Length: 486
Image (cartoon, rainbow, N blue to C red; front, side, top):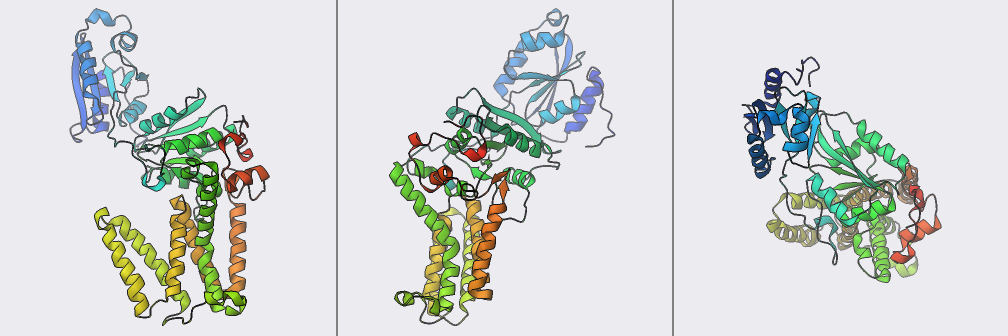
């Protein structure tokens, strides 16, 4: 936006209308609407965006204005209009013309009145929106079927439906010089640590960019840093019940208009390994599901490089486990077999995302036949490689959050390369470096591996085992909540 533009005083009606028409591209952009009107002997102008405005509301307000007499607006037209003759709940005023124009681009209607030095803002907008549906990535067998959508006001309403706490705060911010994207910072004031809230708000307020083309992902990259570390420092969720659970724990949520995913901050490594399904079953069943999930996730990281080490160093195996190694290694080196299938799985995953859902089954069959059966028959791969790649893939899909599964996949590849190049020492050295890296990570001053490093018995117990809800009477100590008791 140019700093040399001369912004007219709003009271200068002609100059103001000319300026606004030029800034909004009236006559150029087909969806920008300008209505020149005259009510109560005064010239008035309405500026709105087609597709955002509620027609029936605007027709009703215009009908009321048409019935006004000039003397009904005296002696203070602004007060009379706002408090008496425009009976709408979402009405405000703005003395800064530039701010009023930026605000109108989000959908509200601007009313400019001749002789009044303030713009009246009527937030009579509607939103293009799909119905709340259960998110694909966070399905449950039993539980709520609603999910966040791409409209921020709908998402905050879905959250408030579950949290009727008078201290629940939904603070509005706008980010992006050109996009002016709506952002909401949500937390329960009586619970959340004010230092974490301030840190997140300060981080977002310092974002200086044209726009947020990738929505919540762009926000994450700005506020978290550590751009070359694959591990996510925030957790995404599309479930209102998951969002509510974390608000009650003391987390801070970030909603971004245009995105169905909400950012949960801060988030540790273990937050990414928990799923709502564990709390929709009996505690014993939930604890079992959680332990199985942990096993699957760590299996997805360590199974391939461990098997590679054992297969290439059979002397490390005890006598009763000699069956683990392959009888023959195939036509190409074992490491290259693993590497090619890993790349093939990623290609298959990307292809599945890009093709219509009706063809996904056919693609899976083709991949299974070509990569599995034919590849083994012609000698490219051996059966054991296919088996252990399948085990690792299943463990990857069992990871609750998509971002964590991708990060773990990169670690698996790195461990495999270290094992191939440097053998057993390389594998253990890289594993140690990986743990050190995670231990040094922090998400808004919260240690990433807490409660494992630094160790907390109560926290580690709650992470490792899905405890009965009546026994979870304390909030996580690491969040430094105002109210530690549930």
